[in-house]
Length: 178
Ligand code: GNR
Ligand code: NI
Image (cartoon, rainbow, N blue to C red; front, side, top):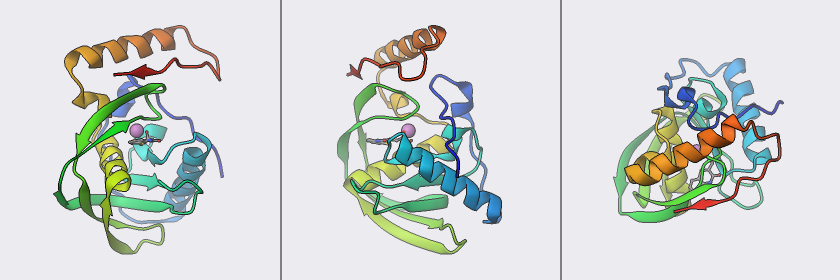
């Protein structure tokens, strides 16, 4: 397994639209495993392939506290949704940025798993929020897109400035909470 580099906003590669996976072969399984390791190491509760510069419709999620609930979604589709929920979101591609976003409280998802088998899942609350956040990444959408233009600009300028400073590994990102 290998740790992958996570793209940081406003990297334009985060704006690409991921393509469906045709066959779950060894290379897809290797990517899933590397994404899982990268998510746990970050640490994060989800990761989309676009964030590690791979344009494929693959996401991994584990919203548990003990790495006990890994969910792998290949070619995920939300087929039904209901309710509303506001959640304070963060993103591994926006280090130190947290802001409330309103999403559906419940989603019904269809996808393919790591073995190539189709499955469906009804998710609520944090898991549902995370699924929506990750599927957005596959469409080139990041959560700050839902914030006001003013907040969005403030975050973009801040992260551009940090990138110019080429902050070395381990630089601490003072939290931006909106
Ligand atoms: O680790 C993450 N935490 C999180 C918290 C609230 C809502 C969504 C997320 S996803 C995020 C990891 C990430 O950036 N996935 O794309
Ligand atoms: Ni994210």
